[in-house]
Length: 191
Image 1 (cartoon, rainbow, N blue to C red):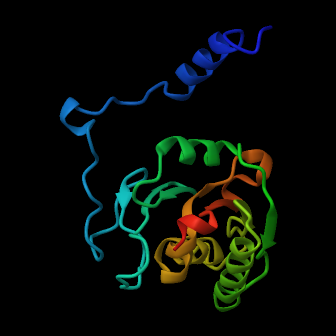
Image 2: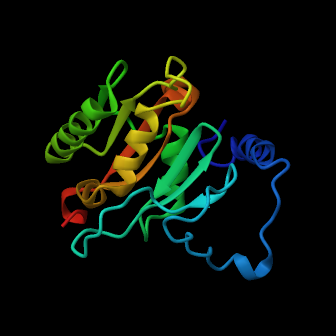
């Protein structure tokens, strides 16, 4: 099999399988997506676009991430981030350079640990890190606690917005909905 073309049919079949059942956008929507609804809007259905949760107001940091939640999974990207980078992240194509395991943490413990971890990873020049938070199966009746706290911090914290380009639920081999991959800005991109 040659490096070019030999796997193309396989890639096309995999793509066709991945989009089976998808509904195409109306031609008018293809040029750009509508902005996220303002904070405080009623909870959107599964797969719907949502505003970044509880973002702090800040004019110096990059803009809010566009967050999409579908069931137990999430994808988010900062303005101007190429959709191809997000697809690669979701597929686990970036090598994971560090992991943070938040299993057993409370919401109050998770946020500072996450902030320290992301700051350290960025300072070390890391590009992709994995946050293991679990799916929240042992949480009280209110549901998962740490997973949404991680997503809220990554999408809404002023400090995170300065460092995070995108994040997505990990593919099954890296923990699936129990883990989140984070793509960090390179040093020249964060300032």
